[in-house]
Image 1 (cartoon, rainbow, N blue to C red):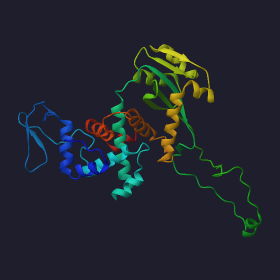
Image 2 (image 1 turned 180 degrees about the vertical axis):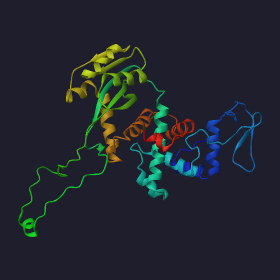
Image 3 (image 1 turned 90 degrees about the vertical axis):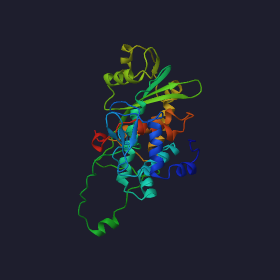
Image 4 (image 1 turned 135 degrees about the horizontal axis):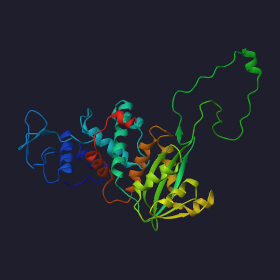
Length: 331
């Protein structure tokens, strides 16, 4: 089967449920059906149910069983459409825009996008960083974060209409949106960013949201995503010195501001792209679901130069990813 190369060919190729199921089966079993119970390579389709039964153990399974599409109530054409739209733009796709295009509830599309982001994260867990690596923390402030919970209502003091008309309004200093002085303050979030520095561009990126910039959290993430005996350069922050206990060549250059951008150019450029991604399409995200958006950014960033179509890589991640429920995504 020849892969589609543009949007028109993609939607023509996967215009029916049968075409989507057939493509999922080819990706899942490229050499033919394999029973998930006994691993026998022979089975037949049942006539009255859309299941495949093994010849040896009589185990019945569906094509979507054990994938992210397991027991979905939405048509597979909707899944394929959203997968293509998510990877078509480097800024991602908002659930509001997709819900209007598909005439579906916004919460339904948002839940589906969260599942896709979960599959992206599971796919990138096995990718390790090697070579020359830059490390730093991205501080996401008020512009890239949304406050959680309802906003408190302010009690306005009772005043007459004449007093309100006669009282002059205070002048606003500066331009743009006026600064708010409410009780619902937006806190900052720290994201640990690791990026491979290659000769002319950035390599693989790995990100993790940190509750606090602690040594044990940094060391655990580095041990998980970085191969031993690599070169890691940081800006000399106090918690970074824990990397001396890790099997690597640790280099700390104390710097900040413009000097830090010159010493660690790749990681600072990646952080800038991350903030643009969060503000460009989503106008900021809440800290509760921020890890999912970090996984989406990393998945797209790590495959930007791949010859394999990005929609195919994401579809494989959904096929070989375990099914998850909404309760798991809320953890």
